[in-house]
Amino acid sequence: MLGYVKTTWPVPEIYLWEKGPSSCGVFSHELVDEIVEERSADPVVCQDRSIRKVCYPSVFPMIAPKPLPLSVLVIPGGGYERVVIDKEGFEIGSWLNSVGITAFVLKYRLPEAPHGQDHGIPLQDAQRAMTLIREQGASWGWPEGKVAVMGFSAGGHLAAELCTRWDTQVPAGIAEYIDAEKCRPDLGLLIYPVVSMQAGVTHQGSRSRLLGFQPSPELVELHSAELQVRQDMPPLFMVHALDDGAVPVANTLRLCEICSKRGLPVEAHIFPEGGHGFGLREKSGTIASWPDLAVHWLTIQGGLK
Image (tube, rainbow, N blue to C red):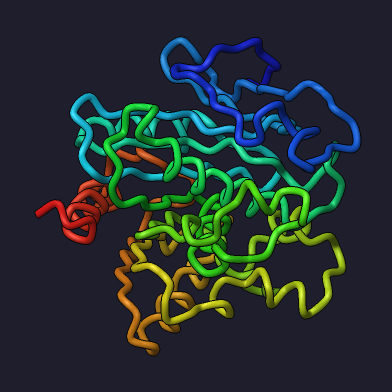
């Protein structure tokens, strides 16, 4: 089932660029209504909304009842075509809240109409979100501390970009709204991520939507996170299934190998089954253990025990 729906969100929405994409030098060619689609066969039991044509990028603060000094910027996937806001956004935030971790769910602009083919805008939104979390998180109810990023599928690619290119220069019109020193995540979690834009490894839909159908070799290299690894990047935690039919497991394996060779802290869990896009919904098999593994890793790496 797929239908356009009017919707309300479970928590307040905070726009990244104050008045929207026409402010702060962040322009849209044509302002249109965002499209929210319900993909669930039974939304009463389990919602599965996604958002297309994002015009008003934002974060949704999900403050834990007894918040620990650790938060996570959650980046849903959607192939750079949509933002899978329930399964890889709000559900992840609720789970993190249950273990005391505050979540900030990101709704980011996509490199399509109404924005045109601009490969830089998703990362700009992630940079702005990190800046806002560190500058205003306390006013939203989070007691400050370390900030991790967790991305799923194409959102995993954006998270990997943030972990390797957090200080990428932005257009002059928005430079005052992004503080590069505040954009670096303390930790990175990549769940069935698109990592590479290289042919034969990448997810073709994500690549063509982000970079176009005939990107230059330089553009492919810039957006292949395994080729942007640096010594000062944060520790990584990765999850992938061998039978992922959408995003080859080679994405995770390549990044893991390069980080390992350079002596960078990385932990990867490769499961025999699970497919793609399971989020928290796969309850059978060993892959159902990944949330517990992630919490354990966050607790240790976040200095909580």
